[in-house]
Every structure is written in C-alpha cells, then in structure tokens.
Amino acid sequence: MRRARTIPLAASVLTAALTTSLAAASPAAADPAAAPADTALARFHDQDVAWAPCTEAELPGLECADIEVPLDYADPGGTRITVAVSRGTADDAERRRGILLTNPGGPGGHGRTVPLSLADNPEAGWALGDTRAAEVYDIIGMDPRGTGASSPRVDCGADPLPFFTRPTDAEFSALTRAAIDYQRTCERTRGDLLPHMSTANTARDMDVIRAALGEEKLNYLGGSYGTYLGAVYGTLFPERMDRSVLDSATRPEGVSRDALMGQAPAFSANMDRYAAWLAEHDDLYGFGATAEEVLETLDATSARLREEPLGEDSPMPGYENNFFDLDIGFHARFQASWDAFASFQWFLVNDEPLPEGYENLSIAYSPAVGDISTPDLQTAVLCETEWPARLGVYREDTRVYREEHPYGSGAGWASPHPCAFSTVDRPEPAVDAERDGYPQGLVIAGELDANTPYEDGVAMAERLDNPLVTVAGDGGHGFYHSFGLPCVRDAVDAYLVDGEAPADVTCQGLPPAEPAPAAETAEAFAQDPAEPVAPLLLPAAGGAGG
Image (cartoon, rainbow, N blue to C red; front, side, top):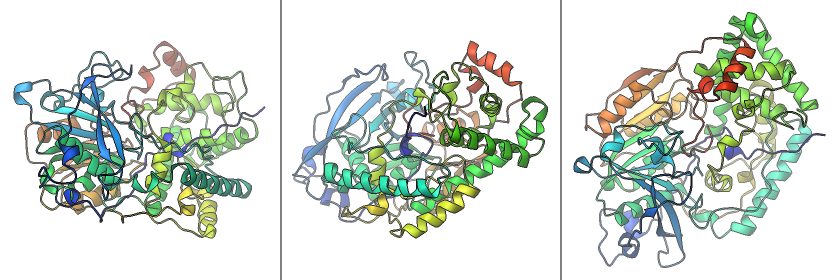
C-alpha cells in the first residue's frame, strides 16, 4: 500500500531566495541614522534585552532573548510581535568589534543555531565551528519574523503542497487545486500577518535588534536568500551597515519566479557531470557506460518507483519517484560525496533492500533535516513578486521541465504556485538592492551551485561593486560556515576580523570522490554514518534546505 507523503517545497532542497518590499517606510526606517527619543520607534530601540541561557537542547551554550518589533512599520504604535534571537559572545572580549548578525537563508529559515556553526562550541557536536569571526564578534542568530520561536509564527493550518518533479497532466490539475486551496486557507487564517511578512520588514527588524543591543553599526553574514536580505538592509540603512559577507548570493533585485526557474537547469548541469562520473566507473556501479545510458537507468528507476514505492519493510516506506528525483538532483551537487550517494542509489536502482541508516542520505525523507524552516512564511514572502496569473504559462513550463529538467527541484517551480492565486494587498514594492554609503563587502558564489546559480552571485557582486569569491568546480551552497574550505575561510576571516580590503579570489572546491563498491561504502556507512558524507553537511545550522 502506497503511503501518501508530501514535501513542503521550503523544507526540502529548494533553498531559494526571493524578493520583497520597500517604499512606504516609517520615518525612522527612512532615516536610519536618526533615532532620537521622540521618534515613533524609540520605544523599540530603547527596550531592555533580557538575555538568558537558551532552554532548547539544540542551542547549547548560547543565550537567547525576545526582541519586540512592530508588526507594521507604517503603524509602530499598533500590534507588536517578537523576534527570537540567540547570542554567542566574542571569545576575545578585548578585541571585540561588535555584533555579527546572521541569516541562513530560506526565506523562512530558522537562524538561532547559526552561532554554533561559527564558534568552537564543544557542547554542539555537529558544529564545524572555530571561525576566527567568533573571536571578535558577538554572533547573533535570528528566527526572522513569522518563523521558529518568533511570535506569532506564520502557520496557516493548510495542507502541505504536494511536490512532483515530473507531474502528469492529472497531477498538474491536482497541483492547481492544492495551490488554490492553500492560498485561500492562508489568507483566511493568517491574512492579518501576510502583508507584513517581507524582506524589507525583516531588515527593519534587524535594525531594531542593532539599536536594542546598543550597537552603532551592524556587521552581517547571510547565506542564500539571506544575501538578498543583507543587501536590502544595506539599501535601507547604509549608515548602519559595516562589514558584510553574502555567501551563495542571489540576484540583487531578489528572486522572482524567473530566478527560481533557474534552479532546475542548474540541477540538470550537475546531473550531467554526475552521470559522466558514474559512466567512468561503470565497472563498479553498472548504471551504464555512457552518461546517456546512466540517465536512462535513473529514469527507469524513477518510473519503477512511481509504480512501486518502497514497502513497509524498508527504512523508507513509501519512498517513490519524486523523492528519488529530488535526492539524486540534490546529491549530484556534492561531488566529494558521490561515492556514498552512488552506493545509496545502487540499492534503489537494483531494487535491493536498503541498508539501515541510508534513509539519512535522503534529503526528502531524512529526519536529520528537522524543524529548520517555516514553509508558510517562505510562501508569504515569495508572493511579493509578480507571478503569472494564466494557467497556460504554468502548463507549458511544466511540460518542458518534466522532460528536460526532472531532477532536483524538477518541475516544482514551473508548476502552479499559491502566489498565482494571491489576493493579498502588498503595501510596498520589491527592494532593488544597491550599495550607496556603506563599505565594500564580500560576495561568495559556487560555480556549480544549483540553489543560487553562479550568475546570480556575479550579478550581486556587480550591482554592489563588491569583490567576488568564486568557488570553482563546486556545487555546494553556503561555503563559509558550512563547508569549511580553507581558502574561503581565510578570505572571509581576513576581511571580517583583520579588516583587510576585500578582493576577488578564486578558491578550488572539493574534488570528486574516489569510487568504491556499493557494498563497501554501505559497510563504512554502517560503522560511521558521518564519514562517507563528511563533505556534505546537511543544513544543521538552520538553513532552509539545501
């Protein structure tokens, strides 16, 4: 019996960026350098922040607090909401140079765990830690408005959207109905919140956090969508931005549907590389002697799993073609772990029982991803851009993508989306980022990144006139605090810590894995689940999925 299971787009591999708004700012937001006591935001800027040890098990050694902000910055005397923040204090108090506010991406990613991935914290066993930035900055993590422990959290109570990598025409119709129902439910249950869940308002929250912590300037580290958020903060509050690092950068105007549609072709490009590697090692894996044969083998496996999902005796009961397509596309990005992923897929291709523990290699299935994002908030922010209203556009795009780009995000962004049916009145247009009045920062982009394609990072660097750190030959996403490449870390630490002028740098990514027989890799995985996939660090630091 097939077990029905859905994948919220935000919580799987689709770590996307988006666009949001600015225009009708409050007086304080319009002139961030001036915050006298009689301004409408003074009560928020002057609030007492009550730090206390975090109580959640996933936040060991950190302090937590709630900071009040207005729901609507055009009406700061109205409803108040809270933004949950965490803090890891600077290791060297004498050299402390302020706060480094962070965001892991999403939109909707929970960010209070990020300080653990930057500091050497022995209580957090999974954290990479030990960046030099932690020596001189108080690292501030944040669950942006509407997410995580911030209140209220945007939870519509709607059924999760189904996810199809290559939807049939019948599934297209089901997606359309689900998207309509989802949007209607969200507008009915959370219509009071949706207009105010924007990147611009999150940036304004960041400035309240800065002021409430008594800091004249804010330093910033953002990944994926968080790069756009940081660029928006610098656009709105240039006098308050100091050093900034934008890791795996999005487009400077935010990410529209067109930008999201760029993910699937990028996944396809990585699939071509992965298929070629598998073909080179056909003697070990047997998927085919050419890249074309390998892709035919994978397509055939996907078709079989559509008809015959894994049974209840599997570690992944109900695992079917959409999960398979998503997983392979995700895995193809991380060439340093291709051996482990090829072993995982060997069992699926050959319809052999999957070893215990291999479910943790599935981005679609694994509980390791955890509660790291708020999908309804992601949708709310995505809806700030214009989405096509005509179903014919989605129908044609879906037919093209299901044939040409079925892996990774597949036809997910080509298919009907709730934003196509939104009736929410957005009070502001999207922010078009610019750098006018704050120092040069660093932009980081991976040449083979599928979540935020390389050309988006190039565009961000050019728009902001920032130097670009290029990670060559690598499909990773989030390089400074997720992958620990020494070249990237050295460039970022020299800028953030030592104040060296940022410069263009090319860093070599992790090399392709050495092939190994599937059974041998499975045995190694059983002995130490972390070892075969050490280069792939799932978003334990709170990112929204990939």
